[in-house]
Image (cartoon, rainbow over all chains, first blue to last red; front, side):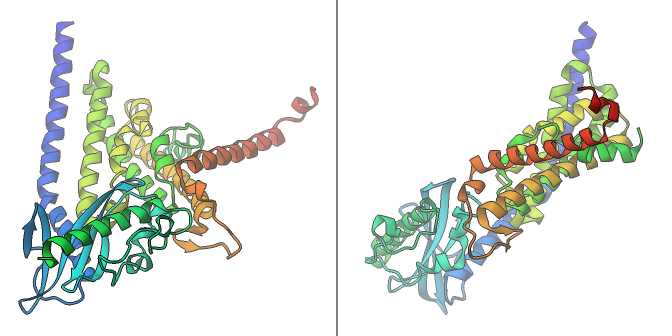
Length: 183
Length: 209
């Protein structure tokens, strides 16, 4: 009986050790690739939200009140600021939005970085027409869905997701307007 | 049992979703569209084939008392590997399915095959069983996803198939829709199979009553 117990421990240990070895190997060989994929994704988002720039905004960072502000420059002249803003009011958890604002306080574009909204329903927040609704808005506009008295169109059957995006955009825009442009 | 027969049994007669009613968590959670169903099915198939191979290789060395934890470690490792590899090389698909990949670990279909097939059969047979069951699972998820996408969004694989007159029933792509669709699909399958059984039954059997 003691032998049997001993064998069980040995077998499980060996299996776990092999698994750990394989996993550490796969992890270390995919780590850089994954980091690069996330960076490319972020760069693609930056290209979409800023009109024109020729620096690397993901490296040109200004930290204000613990928030990263990504600065886009054209020939060393600042053309816009971008900020990541999160709303916890999504249907499927947090929604991360990237908001870019030009130096005169207008939104030049938004991108949804991360969300877990219902596929085929709430995930329409990723559609171009929806993201374009925010273009050109300023802090003076009432950025909220029409159901809440704002100016953003919700889509049929889904109010929660556009509401969460509106909240994230409004907060991000206000932050840039108050803390950076307002100075 | 021939390899072809093992494959066929996995595909339909022992179909994980429609016949064994296993792996319900991913089957109900991800099938909001046909493409999600296919992707989830193929990812599960990959894990199932790998775990079947390894389990059938090591089956003689594992004391029966610790076989379940051993199988779980093997399955969880493969799931993590697939999660990492997909994240690195198929980043866009991973963005959609990423949330559900770790769920494959607790898909009892995979543990079920390790326990009831791979631990008693040869490597080659286990591979065929993995392919059959896995593709059967993928097929079931595709059917479920298609039904829900057509009824809930008026499209299939992203292409709109219904006319302007069709008003999608949003409930079908919400969680309750998964249960409703699965219930009706299983009713249809059982109904058709029962009718066929009655038709094929010997005549005297019918005239008894």
